[in-house]
Image 1: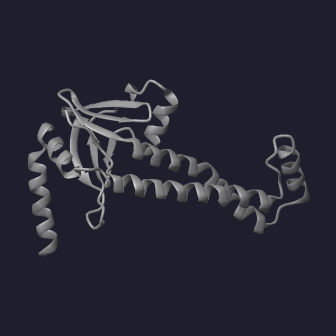
Image 2: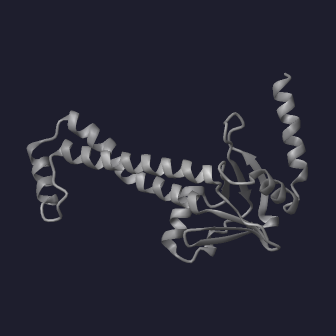
Image 3: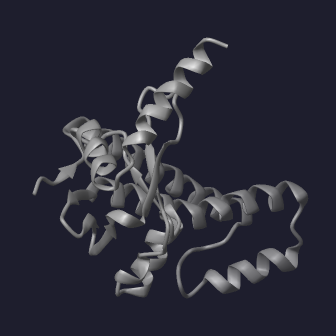
Length: 197
């Protein structure tokens, strides 16, 4: 059984994106603190936060603070998605496609894979998604990891990342084992039709 994982270039790209996400998160934390004039020290956080509210917040403080708060909450989820992508492996087995990453192991049976769909044909590095008939995330025992995995991908989709080594070989294997051979032919027909209206 061959295991497919991100190529060296794919891993490097993911690490660059991860560093960028962490820089954005650090900026959001700093900006939120300076906009509201609060302290992150556990002993002083609530008292400085309450003092800031009692002094009255202007619209020029509220809007940037809300934007930074959204970034503070959303960026750790993005970081998780990037880490899961960085560690992702795909292994075609007799039982189905096994996906593993950071303590997650899910086997998607071949019969549950309904189609493979390209997310963006015009992209230099296209991503494909597997659309699944059922939710298989219940195989992830840890509820927190199950939540993180589901918020990253959804419960009935699984991406085949652009930076994957031998990606086309894996997609061919998936289509063959899931009996989706006609789907590739239809995609070629659609592509030709789109270029020759």
